[in-house]
Image 1 (cartoon, helix red, strand yellow):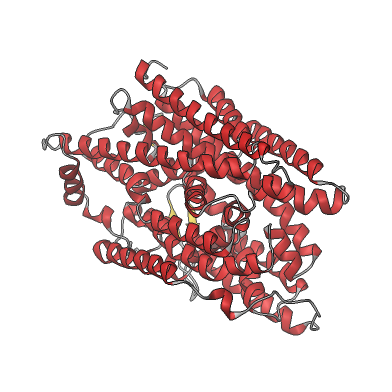
Image 2: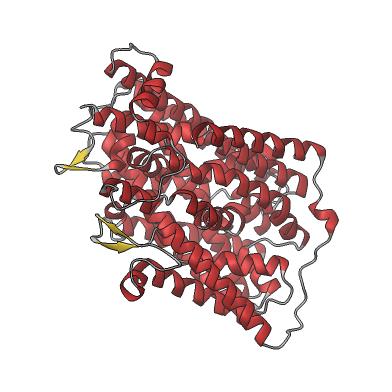
Length: 567
């Protein structure tokens, strides 16, 4: 750890004790107030304020895959990857106005519970098990591995396993306090990750300005980025033509220009923010106004996230392109875009290095703790209580929840020990988006039709789950070989990494969603009408207050200005 000075250690230790101490204070206060029921442990029912909900949403979302993966894609593709952040702002508005009122009106506490209420127990159980595997084997594991990898790189290497264990144990301590402790400590985590993230971006821009002989001037550094690599500041990547370079084709496979706005981006974001226990759990214990304001606050903050998670990657690209960071950006003689963020961190001065590591740790621990709590919530409320011990009281449910949190983190340690899941080879950000994308079309289809089409049936929902996964596998892995490289539905391109023709995975998601929706509608109409109680809905629940409307309009105006600037 010779890359760190004494002041770096001091700053990190202060961060650790502040977060731990504040979490213990929240936990102790909760115990004094005799609030220890299962709903409080899993949902922090009535405890989280709007700003805590908003901060917790951001802390849970911005983790290692964002810092490392998004910076890596910023290096490789440029600002176009900000679509994930900026479309999320619109998705959060949709969730706040139309999704959350449905959940709260129908007293929904978990996503499998929604599926049972709307469809049947079979759909609920299938998806509960599905989500548990996804959260542990894809999300929890990738967050832990990528986070440990980044911190290990900054520390000079050789400490990966110790860092994996340290992050898991720190997350365990926070998660065992329940959702209230997670939610309120996330406020500190967000402050740390924003301050540390901005410090890293500032240093990255000053490195660029110094490289071009402009002195230590962050604004001059940003202008140098715009001048040197204008193509890295375009939100829309052009569709490859006959004379396009392989580099342009590889970029398009990741972010297929305007096509992704008619397909995958909406499915990714609406499924993630609106149909995901890990995210919605923060708002399910609040009243409608508090939940809405917190979600919209998170949407407003999403607009600024590219400054923290993408701009350092673009700066690293410009430096590398002009002869800098040659050693830092290569592994075994090969360029590794995922090294972009950690390569910039290595140039931080004493003190700021400790702050940035604290920011990275804050993002990782917040995400790990939140994800572990969601795993425990789904298992305890939707499997343990319903199928294993139906007479379980609040105390035994909380105990089981804590056991599952510890077990989930232990499994993730085993999976990350030698990167069993192959996360490092795939590329962190792409790994999560791609493999989550295999199930997102089916999940989002059964939710959106379950919300707003009464005729949708349980058998049709099961068909949709199977069809969504099958179509995702087909279009991602086999369609170009079976049906050709150029059809009326898609165009496949040669991927230099996999050495085969592929359809951009965001377009694959759109095609999978289309065929899944058709299959659900056909099966629903072909089968008998099932007398299943519909969700409780009324027009009044979708009305927004003037203050809420002002927040929505502000977000949309800022978003419009950003797209006009970088289109």
